[in-house]
Amino acid sequence: MAAARVARNALASSLRRPSGLLVPKKFPALTKSLASQAPQQVLTPGVITQSTTLSNGLTIATEHSPYVQTATVGVFIDAGSRAETDATNGTAHFLEHLAFKGTKTRTQHQLELEIENMGGHLNAYTSRENTVYYAKSLKDDVGKSVEILADILQNSKLEESAIERERDVILREQEEVDKQLEEVVFDHLHATAFQHQPLGRTILGPKENILSISRANLTDYISTNYKADRMVLAGAGGVPHEQLVELAEKHFSGLKPSGSNLSIGSARGAKPDFVGSEVRMRDDTIPTAHIAIAVEGVSWKDPQYFTALVAQAIIGNWDRAMGNAGHLGSRLSSFVHKHQLANSFMSFSTSYSDTGLWGIYLVTDKVTRIDDLVHFALREWSRLAQIVTETEVERAKAQLKASLLLSLDGTTAVAEDIGRQIITTGRRMNPAEIERVVGAITEKDVMKFAQDRIWDQDVAISALGSIEGLLDYQRIRSDTSRNF
Image (cartoon, rainbow, N blue to C red; front, top):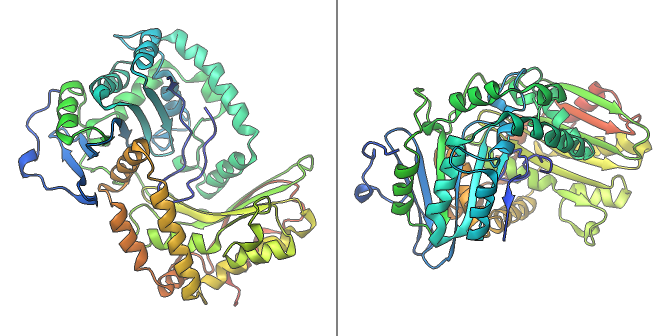
């Protein structure tokens, strides 16, 4: 399984890429009857998103496209590495690996054979706040897909022999992640911004934990976090809502509610403290400098969530290897290209249930000009609080809306959008609603966001490589409050 990446847009959080099989309850009465349930959103004519919550708290949400021959169903769990302790950090990811190693009713070979015979795709991934298991198949095989998902979630054997084998697999994965400098920088950015707090831990966990996590740790994590009211069963494509509700009733009867009064999308535990701080890992054998700088960002539910994304788009992304590198629209892109200050840069807005990170990731081999690069990047941050033009806001809004629509290509993308939104906010905004919200953002809104969140705010810095030219923290911090 490949490494995690920090969320760059409205549809993702910090995720580990999937590692799964890639091959060609009887509940009490519903809290709402289907007959009385009104559709929540209209996406396109004849296509709606429906949501039903069962009495034990399990939410089923679907977007049925009757003419689509495939379907994706997935279980989204409101628990990831943030639900761990220092001693058990890495457990959620470890469980993801073991999910496909056999259940009480299926051996690993039988599970693989069933998926292969369906021509299906079964997969999973872990993030800091969520764990997701999903399956894509022909629409006629949705029942089998849901049954398999229910089996691996509720009946995984977690055999000692499988646990021991997976330790080596995860350690090799960790070695691969450590070779990806961007991943290392962003993991350290979280660690310094949220010091000694759950959100600051990595998803894979430290090596000593990978070597010591026990079956008891795994079963305890499941019993604590795999609760019906902390899950969303999402479906998209050729799966009618009523069918998925019936399948949920049939196959998830073993799930119990947590007994908590917290609803889906609610923050769990104390809000993390953002710490103005830095971590530097100088290594002159690496010919480039990799630098991430962030202020505290916004949560999924924050009223400025979409404004943060528009501000991110105004700063933009740039890569000198791109054919159109000299013609990208953002002012920072034009300046960096003209003065050849960097190899690339990428702005980001990463959200969690109660906080976030908003910032920029810079890569340069011009190691004697790092101070110039950082200074002019943060000068653009300061400008956002003082002068923003209508033209650049409209360009950023158009880019954001296009990226949102382009990301919803296929049943898997739609199912993930449904599950991610409901598990993080408790409801789903459809693309039309998002388009209206983004369309209403003005340059005054962007400046207000920058004044609230960026201007004269503490920053977290993570730097790796040939970074001798990166000046001290206070110099960098002062650049967040310069007059433009």
